[in-house]
Amino acid sequence: MGKYQLDDKGKAHVQRFHEKQKPQKMDKKARVQELLKSVKSRKK
Image (cartoon, rainbow, N blue to C red):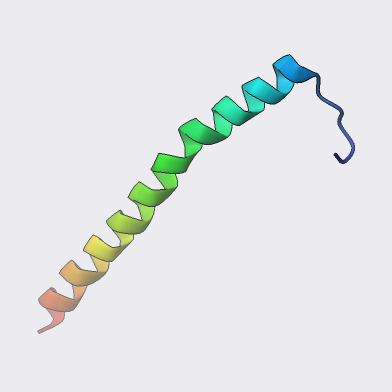
């Protein structure tokens, strides 16, 4: 598991943290796409 060994409680906490972080990454990708579209439309 690498350098740090986690007990069951720690593993659950880390899993919950990553679940909360996932939607934000998807939102960032969608936001970037929206910004690219708006920049392209302004150049025309």
